[in-house]
Image 1 (cartoon, rainbow, N blue to C red):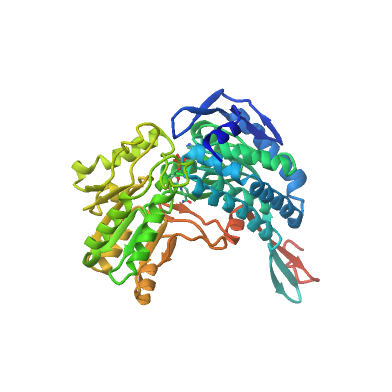
Image 2: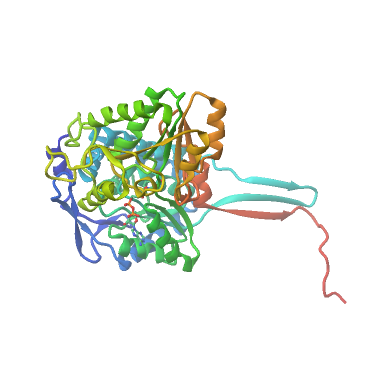
Length: 497
Ligand code: NAD
């Protein structure tokens, strides 16, 4: 699909989706910008506390009246229908995602297929939820069941917007909860298209709702709402902290998928050509805007020079361009404010003393839009801000280490703990390092490959809780334990004369 075809798919106005209908109440409109030109793509409805209250009311009613009582296998059918709708519209969804985020089209297609897979996976899981039994013969039979909780507030970021939203929506609906999604304000297009797919799938009204708007108004109102017991949030760590503060009054349950500064540790015995491919893939696909990006490469002294040279050569060759062009590997960043943030980090070079070995600027051939060169920073020391803070753009930092101890110290010397990648042929060392590295997920001799059954999430400042597989059900359901007497066991008598 071309840029022009895609522009024709964009509605002039992006409206909320509440109780099965598109509505446009709220605090006016804001512009959604095209990262390729920074021209407005559409006007987006700015939700406020009133709109959030309507959406929560609809979701609450649907929860109590239809969704909670529905057997899992029937819910699963709706999820399958939504997956079918995503696959039917996948070209349009991928093109809209590319238009809205600047991520190259050949990468967004894969993301959309993953979005459909999320619905299929959790449709199957909905039919497999089991309870636990604790027989205590002859007096009792105890059992525990998972129960849906109510309305979940799902708050999502602008990187891979549809894929990340479906990762929450699918388990939420499979569990029997209903949803109010607040998509990121910089990338609302695919949430709007998904609402239409869900409307076509005849999901009962109110089970899935979308309120568009800014984080500090629409997002904050969702977090503050007393009838939203669950908040699943993906975004920046500082936003997560604010959300937890604001939700504490109603003692909400939070799932927090936050930022990262994940290390890739490359030992000198590694298959370093494969490590090189994985490092470049993990850092520069999705425009470097990937939470699990291996953005800090730690490379052993003895191979560091060779590895850095190879990295430089490959990074220089990354094709920056129009995300609709099939040759493009790196598109424009999401927003001018984000471009500025990435640029500000690279400009710390003089102050901090690292070297900009490749890139570091706007490419000359792309004077407009939010284009940033694929960038390599070398001579980086662990204490520097570029080694400690999440840049969330196409900027790779390289640090060197002498031995395993030093590598582990550097790897763990950050506040984040989302992912870690280890490259070595020595499997004893691989096991040791994976045990000691502070991260929620470790990949050994591999890039980031996701198995939907595994727990996904981070430690330290990268998050609280896990989603994925049964772990998503741990978040979206509550255990209820039932103690059932089987006969006439003795009951102590108190107060009997
Ligand atoms: P962000 O925190 O700025 O925004 C995320 C969402 O929160 C948006 O929808 C925003 O409108 C909303 N929001 C902002 N303030 C709010 C408030 N006070 N109350 C309620 N909602 C509020 O994040 P971003 O810039 O959109 O996304 C990038 C960040 O997301 C990066 O830090 C990245 O690492 C992280 N991320 C993490 C994961 C993960 O799984 N750990 C995955 C993807 C992205």
